[in-house]
Length: 389
Image (cartoon, rainbow, N blue to C red; front, side):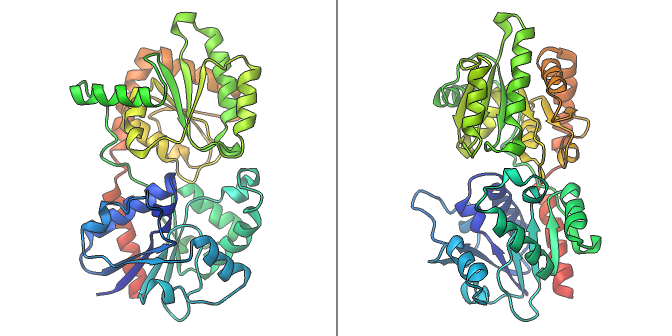
């Protein structure tokens, strides 16, 4: 029975896609595998408001939590260059899985598996916080080099690892994310009606149709061009049929620019910024949307369009990086730099009933192929190969 340590830090301290991916893949692995002993390692004590998730109660799991946060530990490891073996904090193990780009010091012959979600800071440096960019460019390639094996979220990310860091293909395993069972089409039941009404009221949304996008405000998410395409769309529609554009996600570092563009285009009453959406509310927000838009310039995987498809919502996404792997032929894929093409795709997704029906059916079928059970089995196979070595 091997001892496997999984870095669970992002599941506790983050709130976006990487947090969900870490949480769900760990949950699925622990549900599927009883042959090894697992430790979930968390750098930094969680805030009182953060639940540790039901995952902690499903088995007698040792949860190792350090007093020092990942930020402080990274300073010690990578700025002060303190060669403190991570196992002194996480406990002994036969395999260490670093789940979020960075591999701490690990001495001896214990194999390390590293998950790299994307290389956006290399492909689109403006998308990374300036203070973080030098750290990522120094530490991530070194972590990739030291890791025994690397997990990539998509073929696109695997290609970037090979092209930018020279990683051999045999050192990379591609594991697509899954979609949780709670992301399902809307059902006209009393519960769903009440839940939808609650969510719409909570975020200040009425009964008018709306286009939805989900993602932190940063350049690669392409909010500026989405707003510009939306401006063209509303000009083509009768006043009574004009939808709203709902932008959900953290403000990031492009928030002021997008707000200024909305004001310049005279869309202040038509574009709603609702901020970060509670995880429990996401399925109901997707279900209430008429169209989901995701014209991102770069994505390591792209979980939101997958979740939208699972909820029975037509998807318009970009044809860049990993998104064709996710959406396939189930939605409209457009050049993210072409505002007119984006506007036309949004108009079709909103107004063409035949296209909408086909997109919804294909989206549901495609989303069903992306399961956490499947992802967990791929990860367990990777663990087994590393342990055999």
